[in-house]
Length: 437
Ligand SMILES: [Fe+2]
Image 1 (cartoon, rainbow, N blue to C red):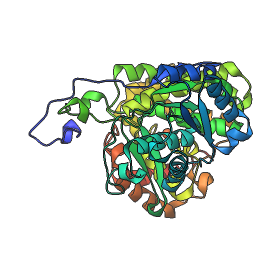
Image 2: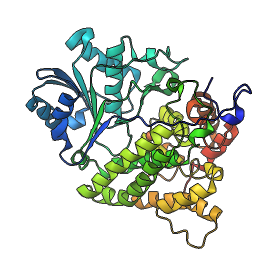
Image 3: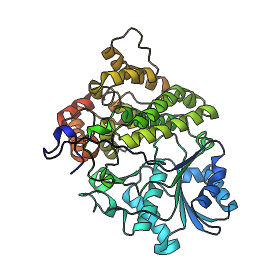
Image 4: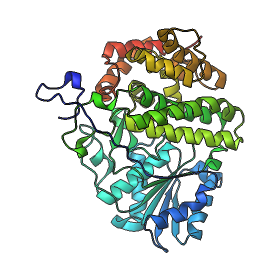
């Protein structure tokens, strides 16, 4: 087993990791990028007359955005169908419905290419649909054991391009698709480099129609990825991989993820107030989309940590919006409990978030990251003050939440920069009930 923290590794092997890598899709970014979608597919080897599917939701159809995407593809010489029944936080069944649509229309061969267009839920539905059509079977076959069968995915030859319409999840570059498994009240990730898209096309003009509350919630998810990626363990805290293929998907922070994290934290924290209050500001929207992209490249390569681990049981039981859950949990978890793991780094983080730490000691500056983050949330004026306001959660609910976190989220907890017990997680949940009065 190559993936254990060096401090707790079996004693036959103590060699720390010495190599890191960064894998990501081709990226096309900017106003008018949608006009290059046809070029992107030709560049990926798709020929004129090929038949593709746009996977999206009804809101984007109603806004006319899905038609805009379809028309660009038709003008480029392709046939295009649109599937717009994606649901928020997709369940296994919802992705199964998209797969049934594909099999009804095209049989087991499926479409010649796929586009995921929308928020993270649409993008994840498209990722799983392409992967399962290429590998056969059903989504549960590729979910990790014991929930699923844990089968490995292989490389897909059918191109997938993702176009996010929110500055949030980072699903356009990540190697993970998140699905809810309703009978087990849990969320599971299909995590593989073969789930990752071939290209991401990011056009900020699609994000100007997002309402203020969704803008704020998705932004806090993006900021969470950047902060968690910046504060996770370093890549050489793990043992050296036995072979490159066994290196974990979330492999710790590296010099390059730090660069992306730092840029993301500054872009997101300095523009989020503007886009929540003035959604038409295309310059600020563009900065946010860029910040979310950078945050995903950093956080979803280095690895999400304790806050995301705690957010999944909350989201499953109370059906809360993911970014809003991250916003509520970040102060107590990432910026509270984890700050002791590296005060110097958290002091730098406070400055990136916009805090003035002049004259403070290092530990005071590290604590200021949490205070500055809470001030930002309060300024946005659309986010709940804690778990209690988010979903009516009280002390009585915390045993279950803590137990679920430590029993189902081992993948994220294993690489948290500070070890946590179930009792610790209980206390952090308690701290997050009320972030302010
Ligand atoms: Fe997230």
